[in-house]
Image 1: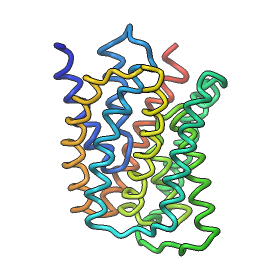
Image 2: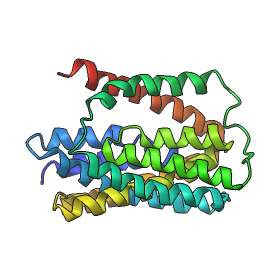
Image 3: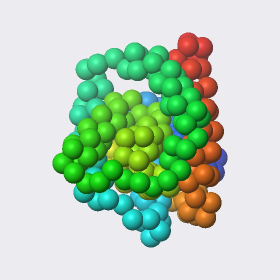
Length: 254
């Protein structure tokens, strides 16, 4: 129990960071693995999902009080994200994650450079409508990133945020709101599947969820007050940190 205060602090800061631009797992997951080095990885990752889903849902609720989303586009992404995450979590034992682990730093680097050299990207909110094609694209985005989240996970929020900005012309603030909703669905799917296997530390997960929610209150308030420019800067910082962390894990840790 003596490690719980440190984990609750990590959950608070993870909720704050995640509410702004994603990437809370960069704080929370290493903290869990450091605190319980002998615990089964699936138990720690599922406990992280329980903690994160509360903060993500709370951030989505706060965002939706201040922004209006094109639901005909966002809902297909949410539903497909849930399905994709179930499929990804089911595939964990079938396919090796090592190729994704090796490729992740380079994919994140592409996102970083693309966003850096497109300073107007995500500046204005100009959704491309709610046509069948836009709904199909949203479903593909949700299914793809949902599968990735269920199967592997790191950087999910950043990928969704970039997707809504790049492919649907959302500004960073609206994209962050949409990202939270899809991320809630992907987290819930993984929790349902892992709970059926008994691989969740519920007392710890719920305690961390409360701390995560408190952090998300602060993070979403910062994003709403300071707008898309602030979220864009946070996105660049968080993706940079994810690149360093994922590269270290993939190429130097072993």
